[in-house]
Length: 219
Image (cartoon, rainbow, N blue to C red):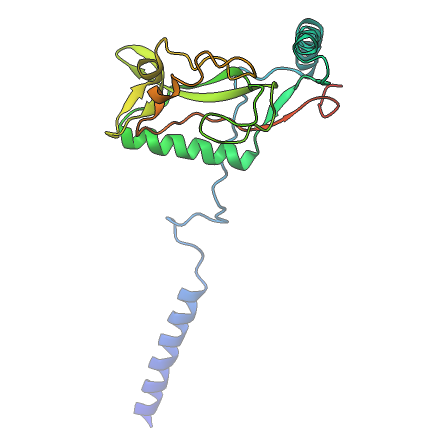
């Protein structure tokens, strides 16, 4: 009988110790009320401008450029109505993919992207480019994007050569010019493109969605 009591007391003691351990609070090295870490808030870049400045820039372009473009295009093609483009848009997903792509190519080439250059551009008055791609917005202004990197102490827009290395675009293109592809002017369009038919990878971005008025935010 006494042995049974001793066994029962032993089991009771073990049970109470186990129960007390389960009810203990968090250990000292475990944070109380742990929450997932919050992302650090991003500061606005220095280039952010106000809505007032944005409107001023837009209106200045209207006043100082749009009329000139319309006049030029009217003289160039009197029988065709022309409304100058006011913007070029890329989807957010396309920009994210582009950034990931150029970062990937730069990393594989062993270089660091220094900046992005946004070149002003103008589509020719033709149906297709020399490579056969359709020209969606003939005669309209646009932009194209070129990533840059530092080479020999200078900043250059670059492409990836057949050997997988980053090379300055300037060295490939140089002073060569494809010339005007416009109707009636083929002075250089047929002979120079062969200069660029190499096994190279371009990182330049274009073919955004260009819109003339009234599809703008400032009119």
